[in-house]
Length: 257
Image (cartoon, rainbow, N blue to C red; front, side):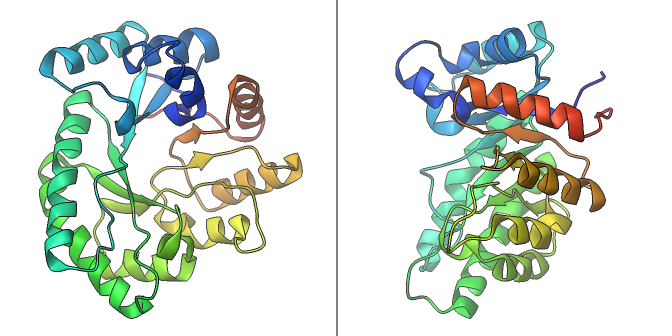
């Protein structure tokens, strides 16, 4: 099947979902009909109860619209850098069901959060997260499911710490999922992207305030050899359409298997 490498992140349209305009079961149709993208990236908290019938319907809707289901962003199931042994075990257990659901749907990855708790020394946090992800990956490996970490605050916003985590876990199924947040005084999104690109297995694309910066970030990905999906998470329909146009102009299409 020939695909572009442009997908749509469900969170980009979360306001429409929250207003009841459509549900997750409609997502494949919305992505194909309204935006003509080839992949979708789910958010677990926007699922209904994931019964077999529900998941089978979702699979059929994706197939009917020729849409690849890429990954599931997992929230509210614990943090990858919990401070207690019990909480770290529970983090791994909580994410297992999403590994199973992602595998059943044909997704290649789930995305996790790894913020940690304020006041924990970075070296301790690294030990905690390494333990958590080893446990989760032991389970995920059975489904060949990738486990990704997105920069959503705390330690995950520190690119150097994230590189240490990637090297400590040292698993081919483990990777980063850089979030192209707008630059801020306390966060240099371009340099974060450069540092974490060698470990990137997904991309949370957002339009930058300046198109030149957007293109600069795209070029960095290409120069680093990144060939995965770009999941558009820019907020709202106009921003999604703009992001797709920029990606089509500056990111070569490829065939995904």
